[in-house]
Image (cartoon, rainbow, N blue to C red; front, top):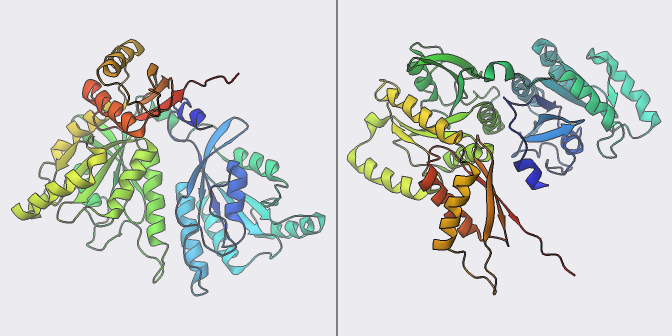
Length: 450
């Protein structure tokens, strides 16, 4: 099953996004599991437990799309309707179509009404799911949801799967046929996501690159509210920058703030080809920075690391920063690093060569002949260690895709993780692959038992 996902053909541009919206405990996560056909979304009988992983790949009738499961705030009664509304607004902004889930057994609540207003205003196509319709009696109640003015409710039981095929058909009909940006992708501007935790200077960097103040910048963490796409001329070429700053807390103490910010960051990374991770050079590399690095690696995007506010770094901090880089960024030594001061524009011109290098690495293809010659040499010089009397060998290898480079190694047995890392390191030394993660899939030959 995993092999299939690794070897899927490159899709030009991002696949369409379906946001699943609704108040706590209407069964959003159960429905998401139903749609993606596996249990991944967190399901618990406690409202608002969806917190971490929020976007999933789905496939129906041969069409791929991404499902964004929204949730992840503390649902105390105070200001709940506004919080759900704020959350729905963000999800809707990111999506091509919306699946609005209502509990048919409860009917329409004030919170649902608040979401409906946002959905109407957005102009996005909406599919209305009347969930928890387990029998004919509840089906009649589901039709009461016509009053919401969002068209015909699709009765469904997320728990039992009743009506889920019809619901998926309705969702596909609402999503755009082709990936939203696929026409301009070919030969269009390269897409860059500027990512990083709030207040590291993402917007200042974008303003400096764009040459004017287009993004609201204030010294308050998370003042940029809307994702802004900017076409910027740099080095004689046009680039598309996707700015992804944090989100201002709409509601006092809205604890979903970080959740929204991470949802926005992951969506921007998915839409980009290369992510520029902005770090504040004065501050220690934090767990939040490491999480964003992991997001970029998981998404298989090229990466450049920009240490901002370099003018404020003294000798002592420089010494400690070097140690932190060695310790924390050991997994991403391949990412080009630049030191900049976005506020004054110092060394910002170094970004373009770094982006070019990262994109070139991301799209590097090694011919099967060169790859196998190289691996043959590597295996004879550094054979795999013997494990319980067996010594697995790499028999043949091929590069399945680029962007990011993905290799398949056919072997006589399972390789140690350490040996896989060794192979990756040597691939980088031999062929470059600057600025890009590398995926290696090992396919051990099955021994037939007689």
